[in-house]
Length: 139
Image (cartoon, rainbow, N blue to C red; front, side, top):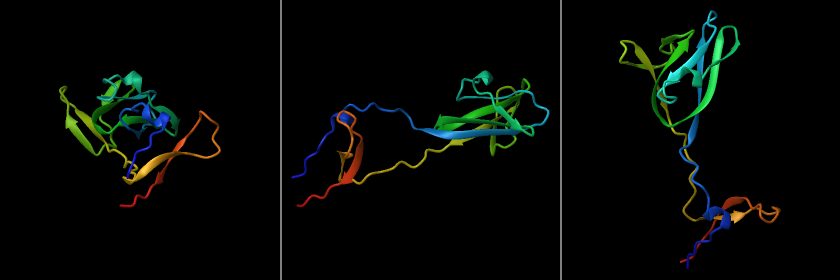
């Protein structure tokens, strides 16, 4: 007989929502004084994602986004422009170009069908942490 075991902590786990993937925006311009990124991921608000100067005219912004396809522009000293490092661009309604960013989902860890959560040993009561153990059933 193959029965399922449940942990009290596992039964009420909250759905973490969409998986977020790391994304890095980079730009180089030794004369720039402000660089931001605005796109469909932040409602086209440049103030929401400023890049940070890291020296030698380089600007960086590390962020996380859900998997998907996004349009964006860099806003350099108030001037909207496509990202020169973007592999793809699309026309925008203002006669210019938007950069295209494709965020791919990272591969998920998949567990075999015959796995069950088991508490780790040496964990204080009430602070159980689950790991997964493969169980074998006989027919």
